[in-house]
Amino acid sequence: MLTTGAKHVLLVCDGKPSMHPRAAEACAALSSASGDFGRLPVTQVLCTKEYNPVHVSATGVWEDRLVRFVGVYGNRCEMNAATGPVFAF
Image (cartoon, rainbow, N blue to C red; front, side):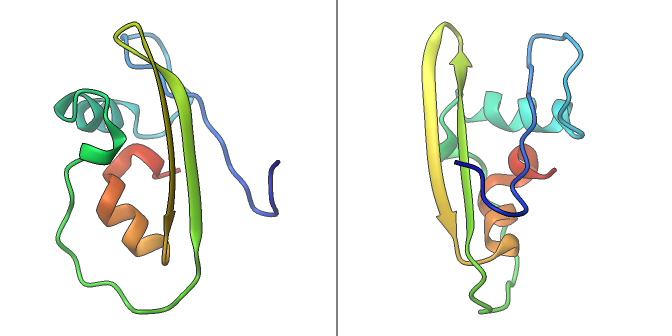
C-alpha cells in the first residue's frame, strides 16, 4: 500500500540504465555491504530530534539471491545517515 507522498524507483546495478537518480553511488554502497541493507555504511551526522517517521522498503535480487529490507527512521536525516544514497530519491 502506498501512502501519501510515497516514492519508488527501480535500481539496477549491472551496468544497465537505472531510474535511480544516484544509481552508481547506491550500487557502490550496496556492493560494499554485499547487498545487505542492514550493513550499509553509516554516515556520522548530527540530525535534529524532530519526529517525522520515514518508512522505507526494498525488494529485489542481489547476486542471485532474493533480498528484502524494511526500515523506519525518526526523520529523513536519520534515514540518509543510515542508508546513504540508496533511498536518496
